[in-house]
Image (tube, rainbow, N blue to C red):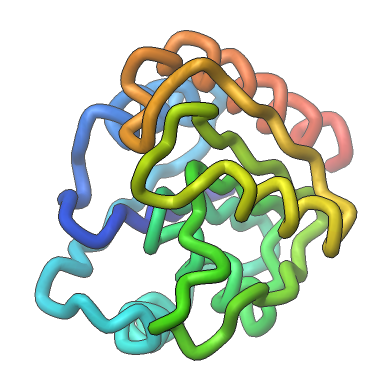
Length: 166
């Protein structure tokens, strides 16, 4: 059982959100990996980097924030993880090759802040509707730091559902 994190465009592999969610995952017996994608700002290159790591898909959970959410969703089509947990994912971004990458995971959930001025919450509302995935809108901005306790609870419930399905 492993959780792979994909950080956002301008953040790093062990930012505040990833550290907090990694503790939630570790407490439930998951191994945690958080690769550093900061060598490129190209989302497709980041997808290639994730796929090159060849994470074991059998018991894999992908977690992505902003650009990392896009990267995780695109990679899910190849990796077919048990779960996909996306934080303010960068969908419907004109410069990205895919606007609404179809998720391929056992469960998919999105968390997005109502006050996000980087990726509008309407993007996640549209995506969730198109792909029929669970969406949680929280009172926060793009960084989601003010909602981190709530996000930790949602992630814990997400992982607990995954463990119950085993």
